[in-house]
Amino acid sequence: MTTVKLDPRLTDPDAARAVADVAALGLTPRHLAGLAVARERVRRPATPPDGDPRVRVTPLTLPGGSGPLPARLYRPVAGPEAATLLYLHGGGWALGDLEINDGVCRTIAVEARVAVVSLDYRLAPEHPFPAALRDAATALDRLAAGLSTPDGVPLPPVLAVGGLSAGGALAAALARRSRDGAAPPVAHQLLICPVLDCDLDRPSYRRFGQGLLLSRDDMAWFWGMYLPDEAARRDPDASPLRARDLRGLPPTTLVVAGADPLRDEAEEYAVRLRAAGVPLEMVLVEGVPHGFVGNPAIRSGRAALARATAAMAARLAAADRR
Image 1 (cartoon, rainbow, N blue to C red):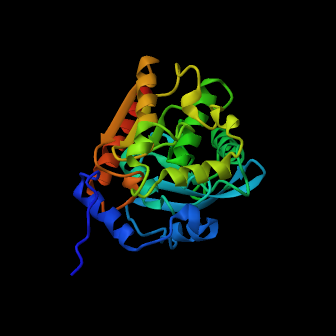
Image 2 (cartoon, helix red, strand yellow):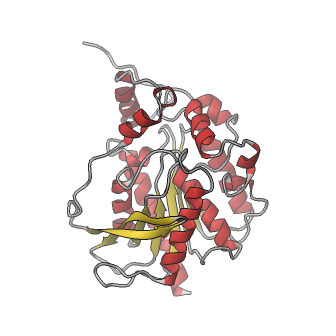
């Protein structure tokens, strides 16, 4: 019987076993396997819309930066909803679709009592920066203008933005644009293990950048497809941490994985948000890898998402009382 070696950096037992299981498959690293293989690996079978009695799931079409895009609406059965959250999925701006974070979207809708609109934005390298951001901005404009829903029930006019990993980068850029008057008002941003900066030489990259699902080489590959011009990556629309001033951003819920190469940029963002007077709830979970909330085998991921959704719901409720 072969003994599975657990990574000591992953102090969460569920996370250690989940990463060891992936390592045991002996897969070629995605940046070496190529884009087609990487996309196929993250492809998920379509989830039945009625698979969860707590949430209603409906396909939508939303305008993007250069034409209509698939989207998906998640509405909690219990209602009423406090806001409409535009959700942007993870995948390094190059991988994924509406299925990749389906479970996360369902959980957010039910536990935060919000209507979640997940957008299938255009992917790099076929559509490099700023295509995905333009898609997200156009979709947010459409939600602000009002959207005819299949069930005929209007969506809440209060808007929020959120996303995981690369989707978190898009959400954070939208929130700053909203603050600057270049996008509709946003009442909250929910950032889960977000990409916030293009610097791949932070200590957390050196400590966690190999062997833990998301590697430094992966991120270099993703950035190379999304924004080949290294100097241009410092644009705050690509690296939200590079914004000079974070004052006036909406209340923020930030989920950080302790064993994530992106940990340092998230913690620096948290420090800057607090210094700028932005209400912040940071959910830091030690000993777990990037994107842990999307893995149902990691119980601390479910707990972290529950904390994050509760924090967002509380902020939205407080804003509504005002």
